[in-house]
Image (cartoon, rainbow, N blue to C red; front, side, top):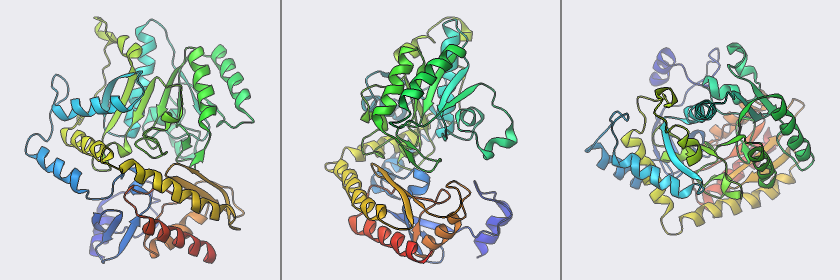
Length: 423
């Protein structure tokens, strides 16, 4: 209790109404899928600590690699200098991305990875002598909390205090089999009206919107059409990257590769803050000009931090361990079986799954959305039963670390079903 009092006195927590006398649980250690508080309670981290933890807490391989790096180099300016972890991580990521990706630009989180993508896209057109400052994005989208990433996100009450975005963004519906032709036609119409620089999207799963999911073939049609119109396509894989959809990247489910990728969250296995933005050689070559105004003047103090890059390398090394990908597929199949139970549950609607991400909505008389009152009821009920699930309004979702066992998944499923009975 002493720690919580000190916390309330000194700290402003994210996404937390400050008028609430909310108790912030003091976590003292983590191991595997478990978090342990200062009272000795354990919690299954079923949301991977805001979707970042891939392999479990305090993973011995990542720990060991970080200890080795600590004795070599903790940080160095990345303008005019480089280092082995940054080079090796960029090389490994480029091996995993589609063949059209040629360069990695480092930043320090998902919002900045998106911010870099937006600026690279705008300046690309500037560098080749064209002014294109408008973007297309999906309705219900979320791309981060910095000003550029907020601008391409959906209209939201969260953004009201900050006024209109600094550049023009036109939102189109999330694709379905019924509206895809309308969307393609709308993009053509938008392109005729505005100088469109790029189209940014969360591939297959719109996370903040409530884990809204759509089909890969629909996205592929939109990307292909944008390319025909010479619109740069930007995949925000901050959440969906590194195995979450059952493939290394959500765009691996497509044949048509986007021009730019934004990566973060799971990139270091949940250990360190790191962002990465990749692009094609065509985009990069627009910056190979002697005119100093054609340089990309963007940087972060902790760009390519050696410790973060080492954690990223260690995380990718875990993926290469024999049978590790099979563990991800195992979770996919377990979710599929539980999904069938949810689809027939009287209190559940719109049960859905993409890879290791499973979500469903609680039925009630309020609109489905972030401010639905079911959120707090279920959040605290799950915590009391020892499971960290952080509902998005009345949307419950699972996105666990890949080390979770079948028995531990069954325990989480059982607690969800028990809670549905009493609430």
